[in-house]
Image (cartoon, rainbow, N blue to C red; front, top):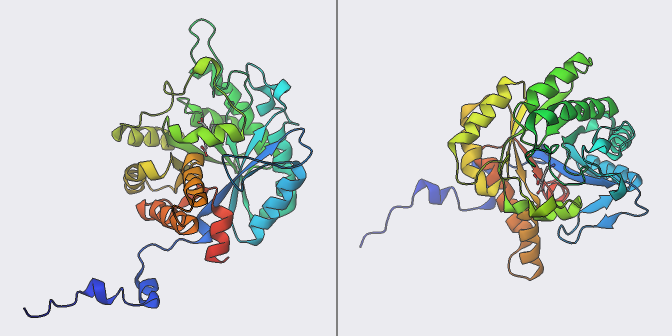
Length: 331
Ligand code: PBG
């Protein structure tokens, strides 16, 4: 048999330098946003067992971690807060208190990194409500009250922007949340604060470690399937994204990332705004757990997964691997 002719693809795969030159996807530290947790009333940073290497921070350790990430060239952080447990209430009032933990966290991070980082805040109530839902509960139905929640989100966003957030990121999947927040920011003169909408957010089983991280349990064994998207649906993601953009979203997010690469690709093709993807806690924890057992090469899998998220079309990637990847990729 005559030799099969070498293909162009094969020739361009021969050396690391050739592969580097022709790579279609170039993951860079510029793509990354690191999620950070700050807890009220903590003496020392506390490791989160289901998120190895991730901490609940004190204000002091938060500021140091932001400085470390900035020095590595990571361009963004997104802040989540844990109030003191006894401060949780039915409406999540610590989420919009001017001296709330997120507001104080934003101030110290801004103070530490100036404009060298984009400082984002997750805008939701679940970490602050005593029932663990993302909105207030209608006492008549026992369901989350969509419209009753919107004014609270507006207050959260205004107070986060006032505390120094460049970007507020509503994650509660209430209908109309982006419009309510944009209107409140504008009428408070906070016209430069951007909104990154968790636009296509699925009711996923991959948020488990996050709920450990923020100490959230949904009351009565409840779930978020009434307001987050159904994993079986693809088309409705585009409808959710279109609504959020019409309401004024500056960036739109798909979440989780790996189980929704088709959605990321669809959204990237459909819109002109930057598309973010959130590689969530469960996705991170699975890699860490398998690596810990020696079953996979953790750093290699992390790079492969986050590269896939970028290849699918994400312009911005929120990941607990941000610091590690920044070290691996070089600033
Ligand atoms: C809601 C929120 C959640 C996450 C980010 N924002 C949890 C939820 O919807 O239950 C999950 C992030 C992760 O798993 O890494 N405030």
